[in-house]
Amino acid sequence: MNSVYNAVKITDKVYWVGAVDWNLRDFHGYTTRKGSTYNAYLIVADKITLIDTVKAPFKEEMMQRIASVIDPQKIAYIVSNHSEMDHSGCLSETMDAVKPEKVFASAIGAKTLREHFSFNQEITPVKDGEQLSLGDMTLQFMETRMLHWPDSMFSYLMEEELLFSQDAFGMHLASAKRFDDEIDPAVLHFEAGYYYANILLPYSALIAKLIGKVAASGLTFKIIAPDHGPIWRTDKKSIIDWYAKWAAQKPTAKAVVTYGTMWKSTEKMAGAICEGLSAGGASYVLLNMEASYRSDIIYELLEAGALIVGSATLNNNMLPKVADVMTYVKGLKPQNLIGAAFGSYGWSGEAIRQIQDTLTEMKVELVGEAIRAKNVPTPDILAQCRDLGKTIAARLKG
Ligand code: FEO
Image 1 (cartoon, rainbow, N blue to C red):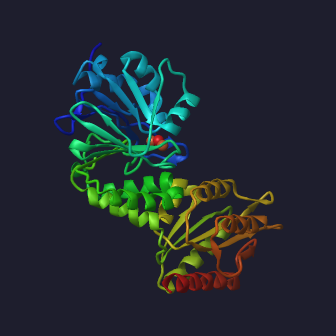
Image 2 (image 1 turned 90 degrees about the horizontal axis):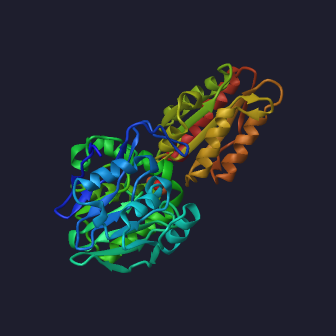
Image 3 (image 1 turned 30 degrees about the horizontal axis):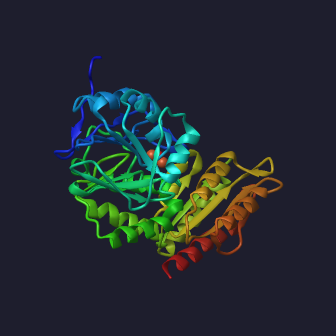
């Protein structure tokens, strides 16, 4: 085999042996404009241990990186922190190739892995708080249910104070760089937030609890090694502080105004609402859904206080792109928002009611009446839009 890929040393005993996916552009609905990485890690302890694997098409890349450090046949243990396919897609094949003594996962992880794949070897379940001796080193497991699946867990390498955090603290960012201190902090903040909004937002209450649990455990971290994106070896505090802030979902004086338009009537209304927001002292972002990714809209809601949605009516429905975005955003369960619906129509106008219903299902507190324009917004309708913007600004600032 001609070897192309090498491991990256993290500490004297731990190596990154993952893969970089430069071409990924969609991760179950999340637009991954910068690709991703699937991080796997090799602990060169007495019992050589592989933490997670990679997406199936990248198995060879991972195996080459492992082989640049040790003979893969020397791997004694594999730990699967998360069953999703981007981390376990080649687990079965890796087990067949390596024939480890044991493979570990959380109790739910062991079950989930068996439901997804077939294995020629048992998966050993581990409990929350359980420790695993690697001879000269020790792993401690911590269940992190729903971060990002029910099976998820962290593994903490005690001697190195190194947390393998699977999806948590990660980002979809393909890069030639492996460490946080090699990447612009503004890029880290944006990409970590984009990832949080598109993957972890629904589990914010659990994340807030987890941060408390980890703080109470007294564990200290020299390194946080997630399953996507850079390894946090320098600035661990920022990513934990960002998570605490995002998990709180405290509303800000910013509105997200987003719409779908047919012949610009709904777009004019959106513009007037933004003028009102601005006059009232609130900040806003204006996103035409046809010119935006659904992932952008949920990202903008991560630090916002209002969601104002408009659509023209097409064939008795909201526009298809509006339905797409509303389905996606509703599923990610943003909290503590106020909002409103608006739109234009030719003869029926159902879209506005449908948006209101969706906002209500999302527990968005509706402010004022929905604004409807027949065909083209009149000066009076545009004045109503400006007033709505001002009213929402006052609420956000209050
Ligand atoms: Fe990176 Fe939930 O998988």
